[in-house]
Length: 105
Image (cartoon, rainbow, N blue to C red; front, side, top):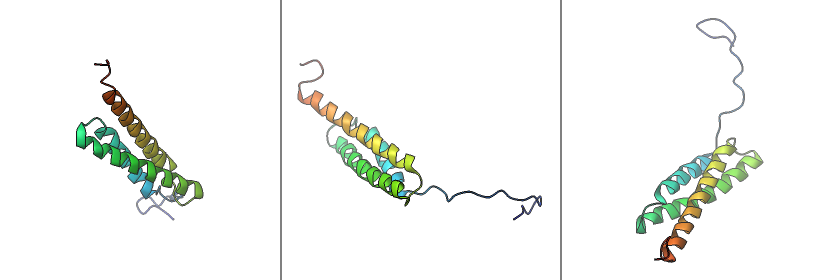
């Protein structure tokens, strides 16, 4: 195959493009969870829900990447770990708030 403008040969394109829909969704949910973890009261519930979805979709995306059904493993791992990070921060905030605050007041 040649380039239509220069008549030079075109290099092979390599493998198929990255695809992992659940990994992409996991990363998006994980970033939303990290952003909304800091919100107070019921708005923080958004962070909890999206954090759990990020962890679930990230685990499934990693399993798909391991079996060869998906190609971008890093996206799923990023979503999984950002969801876990958001949930960890949320639990820490809850524990600090329920103990009377950071200074024991």
